[in-house]
Image 1: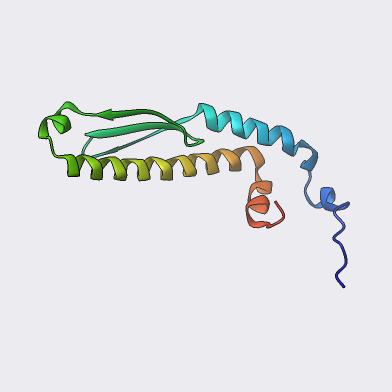
Image 2 (image 1 turned 180 degrees about the horizontal axis):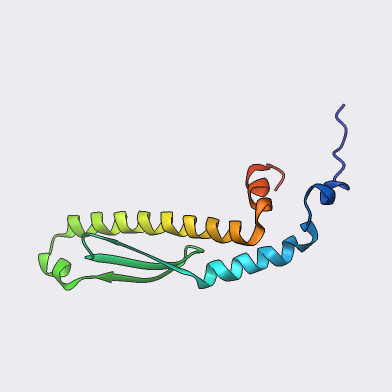
Amino acid sequence: MTTPMDFSSLGSFLPGLNELPAKLEKIQKRTAAETVQAETGAGMVTIEATANMRIRRVTLSESLLELGDREMTEDLLAACFNLVIERCREKAQAITSEELGPMASFLQNNPLF
C-alpha cells in the first residue's frame, strides 16, 4: 500500500507558493497582450499573433497574390503559421520564466502541476 503524499511542507521548498495564483494570472495577461510576428517568402506572408497563440492578423503581399500560385501560397501560409506558433511558445516560456523565476522550471518538470 502506498502512503499518500504530504504536501504540507511544500511551501518551505518553494518560497512564494502562496503568490502562485496571482503570478499565473499575470502571466495570462502578459501573454494575451504581447505580440509576436513571423514572415515567410521574404515577407510575402506575415502573421501577427499574441503570445497566447491568438492570431491577430494575416497579411499577404500584393506580389504573392499577383503570382496566382495557389500551392506556393498554401506552403508559405503553413510555414508562417508553424513559425509564429514556435515564436509564441518561446515568448510564453520567456514570460513564465520572468514571472516565476526558479519556480518555473520546477513546475514545468513536475508531473503534479
